[in-house]
Length: 122
Image (cartoon, rainbow, N blue to C red; front, side, top):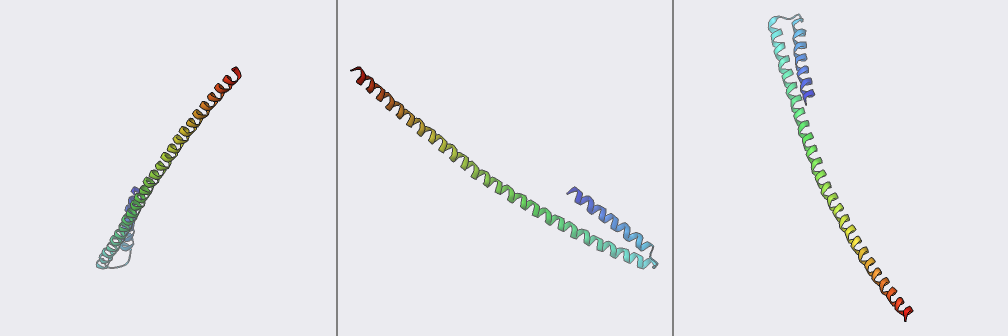
């Protein structure tokens, strides 16, 4: 924004100086020159107001775009958070299921070993 403001200031000053110098060197009577300088100043004032309005509109659009991007980012983060939490829950459940399966297999193996030992010892 500072660059835009500096540019606008430079354009304004340059326009005023250029208009004044051009009119002062023009072969016209003083009253006409003053009138023309006044008109040029008014035209320049209108152009500066238009540029300022355009810059303000652009600023509003940029602000809206940033706000929209922020909202989308927040929503995306919430979706990703839920996905990660679901994956963690699924991983925990898979761990618990596997641990239970291994316990059951261990218990069955122990029973089989005990039964075989009793059969071989008898």
